[in-house]
Structure formats: C-alpha cells, structure tokens
Amino acid sequence: MSNHNLRASSTKLETASKELEQKVAELKESEEKYRSLFETANDAIFMVNLQGYISFANPKFFEVMGYSPQELEKLHFTHLVHPDDVSLVMNRFKRRLAGEEVETNYQFRALTKDKRVVYVDGNFSLVKKEGKVIGIQAIARDITQRKYLEKNLEERTKQLKALYDTTRRVASSLSLDEVLSTITQESANLLKVDGAIIRLLDAEHKMLEVVKAHNLKTDYPGQGMQGVGEGVLGRILLEGKPIVVQDVQKDPRYLRKEWAKKEGFISFLGVPLESKKKIIGTLAFLSRRKRLFQKKEVSLALAFANQTAVAIENAQLYEEQKRSLLERKKLHEISVASSSKLDTSSILKLIVESALELTGAKRATIRLLTRDKKKVEKALY
Image (tube, rainbow, N blue to C red; front, side):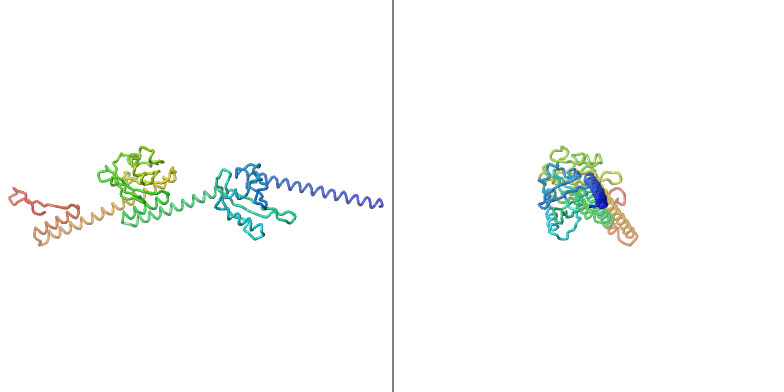
C-alpha cells in the first residue's frame, strides 16, 4: 500500500472515529435526557412484561402506589387495579399483546399498597426489542382530585336541582301535606339518610307535634308529641341551631332511645324551622348507619328547612285568605238577610250557622233581652 493510500485510509478512519464518538455522545446525552425525564416525571411510568409483572418503574410510580423498589419484581400489575376494573384492564392488555387495535388511552381505578383508591388516566403502548414485543409501557396520571371535584360538582348540581324543584312545588301547590311529603322524601334522598321527620309547635307553643314523617317502620312514640325544652329537639328550639348526634344510644340528649333501637336508627341531624324570625318547629334526619354529618350536609338540611318554613307560611297565608273571604261572604249574607223581609228567627238561624262554620264550634246559642229588658232569653241554639 502506497503512502498516499495509507494516509487516505488513516484520514477515513479518523473521520469515522470522530463520527462514532459524536454519535455515542449524542446517544449518551439523549439517554441522560430520557433518564432525567423518567426520574422527574409527574406521571407514573412503568413497564409490564409479557407475564404481567412490573419490570421497571420511575420514582413517581412508587410515590403514588406506595410500594418500594424491592417489591417490584414480585408485583403483578393486576394487584395495582381496583377489583371492579381488573377485567377491563386485563382484556385490553391481552388484546394489545395479541396485536389487536386497542384504545391506547383510558381511565380506570388503581389500588395502592394500603388499599387506597386512585383514579388514573393511563396511556399504554407496546415495547419492542429487535422487532419483537417484550412488554407494554404505561404512563399513568393521577386524576383523583379531578374526579372528586367532578363528583362534588355533580352532587351539588343534583342538590340545586332538587332544591329548585322543591321551590317550584312550594310556590305552585296549595296542599301543605303534598309539599311536606315532597320535602321529606327529596331531602332524605339527597342526604342519603333513612328517615325524615317534620315537627311543628302547637298553638300554645308548648308541645312539638309530628306533622309529616318519611320512611318510618313504626309509629313515633307518644303520638309524636314532645315538650318544648325536652331532649335534643328542645335544644334545637331553644338555641335555634342545628345539632348532630353521631350515636343516639350514647347521647343523653336523645330521649327516644327504645324507639330508635326498634327502627335501627343510629345517627341524627336536626335543624330548626324558622318563620318570621321565630322558631316554629324542627326538621330531623335519621340514619341507620353511623354518620358524622359534614358542614355541607348541615347546610343542605338548613336549605330544606327554609323551604319547609316557606311552605308552612304559604299554607297559613292561604288559610287566612280563605277565612277572610268566608267571613266577608257570611257577613254579606247576614247583611242582605237583615235588610230583607225574612223573619227574625230565620235571620238568627243564619247567624248561628255562619258562626259555627267560621269558628268550627259544634254548638252556638243566641240570647236576647226581653222587651222589658229585665230578662235574657235563649232565642236560638
């Protein structure tokens, strides 16, 4: 080989060596970038081998799922999935490995080491080596907070719709019994309780009386009467504030323990009914499972209590208007009769009948002075 050819070969070798070094450097830089992304990613990244075991995972995976790197090799991916979602995930896993066209992105519920449910949005793709499938790579984003926000928004929308529907019925219905039935049923459903009771103070404001109950197995004891100041209901009346009892059998303020035991009731939530700045009764909710009612649930109960008070106000106003119209009608009839040629006996009879209808009394008597004004005689019974 001539010196010229030797120098040319040496130059080519040096060029090839530099190109190789550059490619190795670029590859190393690329690997470092990928490793950095892999290590610092906010999403859990892991690979599932053909047998369904996790072969490697990034730090975020261990943070979210609660496992240690030492537990990885014995961790089958189905252990990470909520039991109700295993069939969905397993079906797509097998179909993807079989080469079928499967949706690459979908949501499911994961299960952490301490059995906590995590909602994830997963993206799955095949991993190949030398043209042969060796597993599936998964990128899973924790969307639990978003799911809970969506759920809360859905519940709030449902509550507002129920309140709106109740408001419409309160405004449009003249039947107090019908409206109270709607309120107890709708409020119990939304609060996820088993029973609801509306109580109102009697005319003397001394006793609470049950006027509407929802989903009770037995009659309320004592015909539903309870004295003001007695027990937990009495405190609600006196303080005008909601009261929560987690276990009615252990709380001395709750008086109807035997009845609650027969019904199976455990937890209690009671709120006041307020009309024109006066407490007129209570709205109570009872649960057959132990509950610690949260602030948002108490607020919802108060919203239904307001609707109940409005319904009662409307009913009372309607009855007052009916009575006022009836009074005017009867007075007009008596006035017309007095100006007519009817005899005194007929006029007095009309007066008595009108008085009985207006007062609801069973008997009425009219007494008149004699002509000499010395005696009072019964003119009509």
